[in-house]
Image (cartoon, rainbow, N blue to C red; front, side):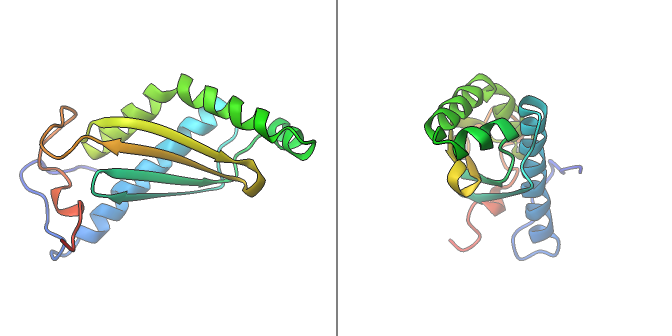
Length: 148
């Protein structure tokens, strides 16, 4: 998808919602690809949510057979610790993906894992608008909070 750097559509313009949805879908797909590449298995569902400077990607499924076995035998804490270590190790991959899609710099990255419910969350706090170095300053401006 090509993003125009000339201007960003306002939320009222036709296509603005579709563009926002496409960008969030692109983020979800990128995070899934990273999980597949580094874990050997990716989530079965992913959904990205953007609210001002907070991007959250919720992932369902994706724990490996080994992680599921450990969890089933009372070693959920070890699964969580292993996942957190891996997520720290590949943090730059996550950051690069988000920054290249949203044209916003990532200020902070955090992960949460819930093997009991087969859920994971990748959380990105983006730099405030105007402090980006990843791309055009006004990209996605209309998507920050369309209601105020």
